[in-house]
Image: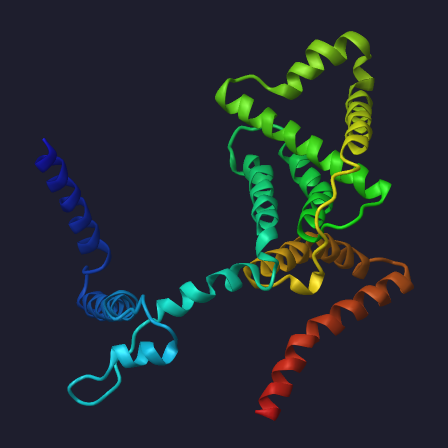
Length: 293
């Protein structure tokens, strides 16, 4: 049975290739050329990364010494994975304090779990989950990454972010694993008995705010070690900057695009000027580098 299934799969693939890749002499020649190019690229990468890769070495010079030269006297090229292993911590965390790197891991894990429901089909309240992450995660993530003393407002926002994160996580895990939604349970079993239907949203918001105030009191003495922002770096800093740029850039772009179509001269002039100036910055950089280099 397995041999029959494998033969049918091979036959389907061969028929597809014959109909799409080798259906004329021009396509046959182009397909063979592309296959040779792909083979050479893949084999070159595999040879450089795996076959000739160096995993144990003290420095880059020792990598070159181990690789040596071929029979023609040309240097053999290969990946120096020993250097990557040595600098892996700096690549990921930059100069972040090693004893506090668990905070970076925890912050990224919280963000992944918080945004996971957005990729789950047939799950309700995705818009609220997304806006909750955009509005609240920066406070929780920012405090995890930087630490230090907190104001009352910061304590409240961190507590609110923790509550909303836990609520969302329990809600979507329960909805997918046990077919029981925490949000629906709160709404139907508790809120409906106390408040009118029009007051449900305000009741839930008041509930979250009240619990956040209580939690803010409880975590007031929970203070993380202060980490100077200049120690942020590596892949972690890249994620922070790219996330901030996406969160701020999309709504800003929409607002500026609408402002450019505004009938008010001041708003239109500001939007057009802002867009044209910042749109020309990459071109100016390219022209400058082309002239200087």
